[in-house]
Image (cartoon, rainbow, N blue to C red; front, side):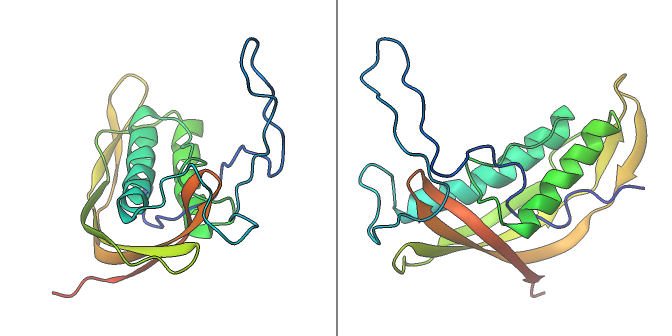
Length: 182
């Protein structure tokens, strides 16, 4: 029996090399700009990114949405738009989606259900987003759509995502969990 999506974290499959130049597209004004997955080196927020609490909240919601969708599609989650490469809990989530993909399985529905998502005030280039996550039991389907196994539910937890502001917006650094109060 596979326990799906119990680690909820960040990192894993980041495909953006830090500092690499983006090649110019034919006919565009882009002459290549630096790409960085980490915080802005200047100590100030990048000028064109959304650094609002709402953007931090959307980043956390987007992360869990991608993990759910990847598990449902039987593909490896791509979390570079929402998480930094060093996030170990995220790497665990990506690993679960990779395991499903390698075994030719997919989830029959979304495992994660977020609620009470709230960004705390920003401190420099860091913020935290608190949330409650319910991990539902899901069926695991083979390529023909037959249920071959189940992934059990996990007790509801409260979580905190620590995010860093990068040149590309908010990215999850790590996730922390605690049991939800009854």
